[in-house]
Image (cartoon, rainbow, N blue to C red; front, side, top):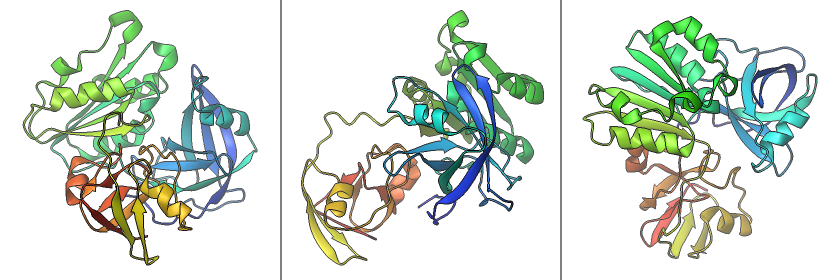
Length: 321
């Protein structure tokens, strides 16, 4: 099932109204329409595409209040050894600067559960801000585990602790070592939803900790692509229901690449299976899901796929393209 907040991908012009440093190398940006008027509605867990140039698009989680449609708020960690997007954002997004974004999409929504545990590492706290607020309003039991190197690397830590008290656990790894998620999550009751966002190791630890727990589901928001080394890839036939084309997808080329080479316009961004931009409806055929976006349930439903990395598990796949 496609979980995007909005199917509209038309760019929106916004202006940077405010900019604040919220932690070491992390700045918060408040975006609004140049004149006045509401921005598209969104739900906790959603992110926006920041169009930094024609070829440079990056996704950032919304960390503001969905009840305030006048602004969007994002926080960006400047990564000197990254792919250049965060550095470009820090350079471009000065107060008064104009930039384009795409409407919010959501692959990290708050599901119905008997209780919630939110696990965040560093900048992974950004989608948790509205998720935690929604859980608190819902009245179900919840708690947040927030880890980071130290105070300077953990944006919003004081704000969260002041607002929610003992429901928030703050952990400094430089002082106390690695947080023991296995022990922390071991007592999770059936019906608990565990949300994890942060470094790959943190998410892997949360998934491993919950693997043997009854009716405890893990939902993850990843910043890095899944490790696909050694994954078996073979050629298959691809039919595009809208375009009317039948194409061959070689073992070493993605569906997205083959479609683009045939003149088919397909929205994309990260090309690593982490952002959800290229999500496409599956008409028929079994999918070999290789993305880091869809939940296990969504994968089992086989209704959509990320065409930048996922492939056909059989001989033929029909997509709504």
